[in-house]
Image 1 (cartoon, rainbow, N blue to C red):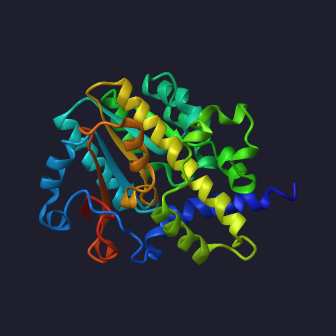
Image 2 (image 1 turned 90 degrees about the horizontal axis):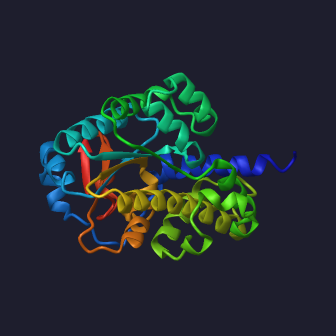
Length: 297
């Protein structure tokens, strides 16, 4: 029992650092070119952004998990995109892959919303207020949109953060990509995560081996979500996938987007990312390429 504290701490830190603190720690570490020129980002209003997003195969709406305004904007964008294309799937970091069947049962009216919360272990595995995400799910149910449970089981993330990928059993690997697909070679991403890790790691968690496991767990998280997005896109012609995830998984394309693109290998495939900001935010000052568009609250 004495060993349980460390992985829990690491996992909570992993979720918080890249979901909430990530952008607070960015130096000029982004060296990728922006998908959309920064001048165009600044010139487009919300309607212009929506028109561009409608052309994309996958749209990423990168949130700060505890921002009510972000969640309201996500619903607004989803509703607008649905008006243009009824073939939309909603991918959600908030649900872990073993619970896909429970989401499908909710969408089919076989279980209630309360049962969905209980049977997906939402409170234990995610825990941010349900009402942040409930409107998205209700909209999906009302309009018969598929909802994809994207995330890695938290047990697996904790184990990798503590013991590394090699520790996983065959049974534990059933909800993640093959280990050969867990790519940790993105130098820019490594640098970004390392600076967050060093800024926020607790005493005793700052050694190099600890960081390697932490980074691998973060990449596993990204690869797992990317695999399911790519698989759905390839299996369902004409669908647009709208992804709801923490902005740390989306910025600069390092996390999920680059790993989806690697799996699709299609020059015609288009992805677009959106970050949300209020007038007080200064996200656009952290470097070009952080996102394709900024949506003003």
